[in-house]
Amino acid sequence: MNYSSKLLELAVEEFSKLPGIGKKTALRLVLDLLKREKDEVNRFASAMKSLREGIRYCKKCHNISDVEICQLCSNPRRDAFTLCIVEDIRDVMAVENTQQYKGLYHVLGGVISPMEGIGPQHLNIESLIQKVKSGEVKEIIFALSTTMEGDTTNFYIYKKLKEYSIKVSTIARGIAFGDELEYADEITLGRSIANRLPYESSINS
Amino acid sequence: MNYSSKLLELAVEEFSKLPGIGKKTALRLVLDLLKREKDEVNRFASAMKSLREGIRYCKKCHNISDVEICQLCSNPRRDAFTLCIVEDIRDVMAVENTQQYKGLYHVLGGVISPMEGIGPQHLNIESLIQKVKSGEVKEIIFALSTTMEGDTTNFYIYKKLKEYSIKVSTIARGIAFGDELEYADEITLGRSIANRLPYESSINS
Image (cartoon, rainbow over all chains, first blue to last red; front, side, top):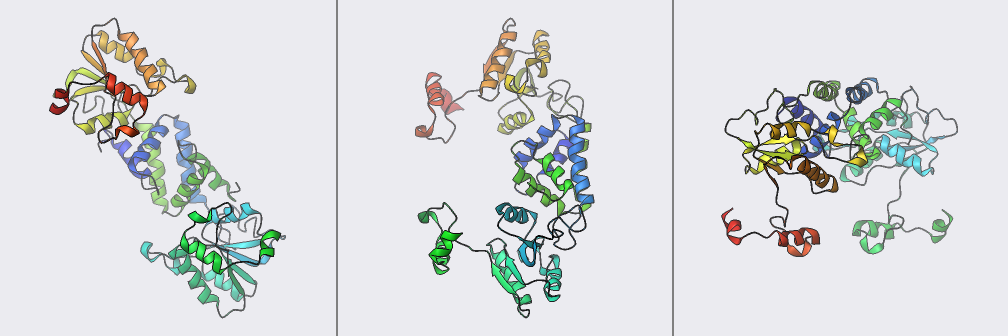
């Protein structure tokens, strides 16, 4: 494409490096920025810079946090014996939104993905094992995506923790609330039959 | 939403001001930036800043350009008597990609939209009238979107230029190449029947 301006081309290129943003969308976004006041664009640019430079992670759960120990980890009313293993802050927010979970989190920062060159050493797995080793954890709950990478990560951690006597569970997979059976994929439906629950437990929850 | 970090919240807010970017997408994009090297994020931020600060527009056609008179306007092989009226650089690029147009452009910078508070005075209309007045233009071709705003803008300019003896045309509307008739909307199909062309012209083009 001929952008007729180097500055424009550069901005479009930078934007289209973001996931899910193609050249056309990038151009649309950049042209929107161009219509704004200089101050506004500077605010946009410096928000990104100061985020990347000033970002900190909770020393306990590795979630993004402005303080050393995040609000969740420092809350004495949360159950510190249960850890929910998630990929990133989005999953913490999703579980928190349910208001059903009262334990703490452990944010891995990704999942094992040989395709993208992400191995266990790139994730916060070692600190999880240390936590379990020190005896401060009684149960961990896997809440990673049901992808090949998520399953691999679950299995890797599971094997690492097998020697310690803690409960390891995974969030229930099944037919989503409001879903129609005929549109469910076979694997989900098959598993939800295999892992069927006593009817009483479903009416009590 | 509880982002557990002010810096993160600010970055997400800035991103979600962009058109078509909601809070969830913004968070996804911001987390992607966070995973990158500091240098890369700085490059992203400064590309936006220097674009907004250094951007220039062609003095003749008002398209984005790094030089005073853009490549198109300064090309002696283009037909300077014909002007294609477009909204922004994206439309210039779209028409240029067809390789069917050899005239010049006039970029309005938007369309008249009372809903968004954009009146004729915010667009490059006055300079268009001056060009026509000076006698350097023989034909103008409207190539704005077929929306209410685009039509209003066409009509506004048409009325302003009525007193000058120039040809005013609009790009053909009709059934797109490869489209099936049964899926065409009534207005498009109706107009394409009303504006039917001699068969000879369709086989020659």
